[in-house]
Image (cartoon, rainbow, N blue to C red; front, side):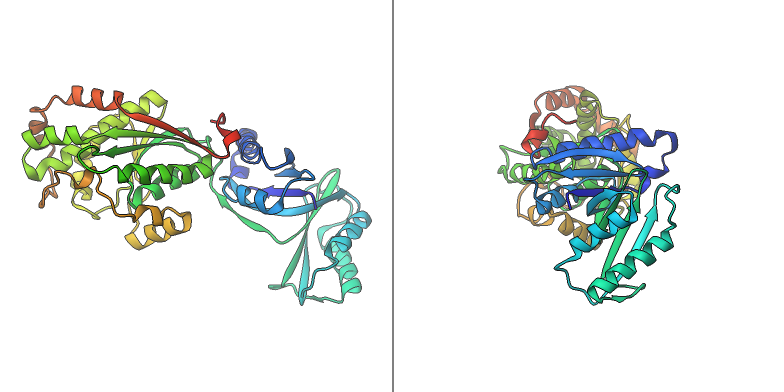
Amino acid sequence: MRSIVIHYQEIALKGANRPWFIGRLVRHLRAALADLGVTEVRPLMGRVEIVLGTTASWDLVRERVAHVFGIANFSRAGRTAADLDVLTEAVLADLNGLSTGSFRVAARRADKRFPVPSPEIERRLGSSIQTKFGWRVQLERPELTVHVEMLRNHAFYSFGKEPGLGGLPTGASGRVVCLLSGGIDSPVAAWRVMRRGCTASLVHFHAHPFLPATSQHKVREIAALLARYQLRMRLHLVAFGELQRQVVLAVPPALRVIVYRRLMLRIAEVIARRDGARALVTGDVIGQVASQTIENLSVIESVATIPVLRPLIAFDKDEISAEAERLGTFPISIIPDEDCCTLFTPKHPVTRARRYEIEAVEMQLPIVEMVRTAAQGAQVEDFAFPAVASSVR
């Protein structure tokens, strides 16, 4: 069995734009598998086929494919001519050595011109399997399902399916910049917009040298992990401690967190425009901390002139933590550190800020200069997975 058959779901609903989305998926698969001995990735009728070379490992290829957005499910498959006798012979040969208590055959004719209807394919192939191996046919919840797909010039067969990530192919929805704190929430928020086809870059605000560089080490690990999904990840490290010191000298304690957040959005937007991104992404959750009340979120967002996306806005902490554990970011995020959010932070921040009050205190600060200096001084680091995918965007 030297093929992998990729099925997509949401892409199939894209009408006249479907070929463009399929092209994005095929391009991403080729880049993700470039170093694993895959000989071809090609779109077929309603699916994509990956052809494994003689050196390709199913386990390694499966792990890579499982990280690609836009896939509903995939299967290791055999390919034969579109002839039921040839198909049956190949299926029986590959079932040798397997053991199961029950099975069923699930057939689908992608090309309706194939003369044998799907129920008859299932009956005839199932009868051959039962005759040779003596297995019991069970239509509901069998231990083994033999999937058959009849296309125009050839057929595929497979034994079971692997779940995909769903969503849309990377790059299908444009570019965004994600504010990455190093905590639990923001990596999950970044992953969720990536799953919707956005190509994400990351911006992290740190307080080094006022605080240790632990948070920077954490976000580098997170960036490398997220790069496994979109193959390439850019991380911007912005020194924020000096800006916070200036805010402390000019802004009343209760209002400082709001001013910090507004500065972050302004700086992130400058970086986003420079990178060709069309939106900002945050890990905000309604009511989770003082800066995330509806009133404060509104005041903070008012400085942005591009959309601010909040994919986790109605999630609770348990839901986000479970997602972070599944992604693998949770163990990194909970490493103790001191980031810029802990520096110069008041004990009792305002929970219902008024925009005119914040704008009045910001008049005491050289906002334009602060934003320009911070954005220009951002340290940029690029991550790629695998190394041969570094040129894919």
